[in-house]
Image 1 (spheres, helix red, strand yellow):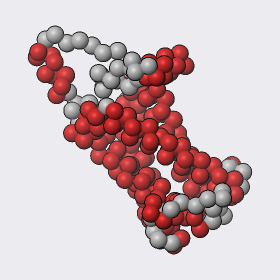
Image 2: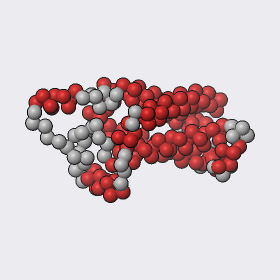
Image 3: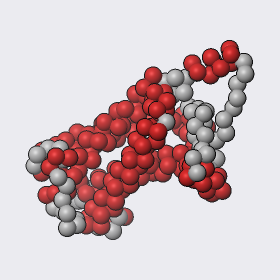
Image 4: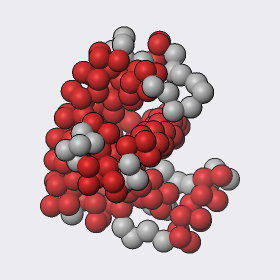
Length: 210
């Protein structure tokens, strides 16, 4: 993503006050963020009741206190995430935002931006345009979000959604897929938050829009 030098003070002022993140994006972003954090912490509480691996999560980072409490929090956040996530996908597609922001994506562009980022030459001057790495990450996390919801449904209602559970190879396999999808979301959050700290104006744009 290249930066543009603006010599006209009026144009510079207009650029600074331009809306980078519209209101609907900001509202849905923070609702999704809240729902995802609740689902992760309550999901770790549920995991501790029947671990897939020889480790468990500390009670200080889980939510619910016990299996029943974790399930209640998890299901409540699930509906919030599904409803808000569907609204985000519908509005994003209807307004053309996804087409403008996330495409095109090319392998050469992704590699080039990774090299620039690794050598601290990747520009963040124009927040209105996503670089190729951002496009790939945002598109990928939306697909992972769909996967985590579908595997969650197959685990929650394995009888009612037995066809869906079968798609993921059965109940036990679906649990593993769900866990790794959750892990991918956690990894994305680490990268996302790190970038927000490194480029604080992007966080500001997501709060006030400009």
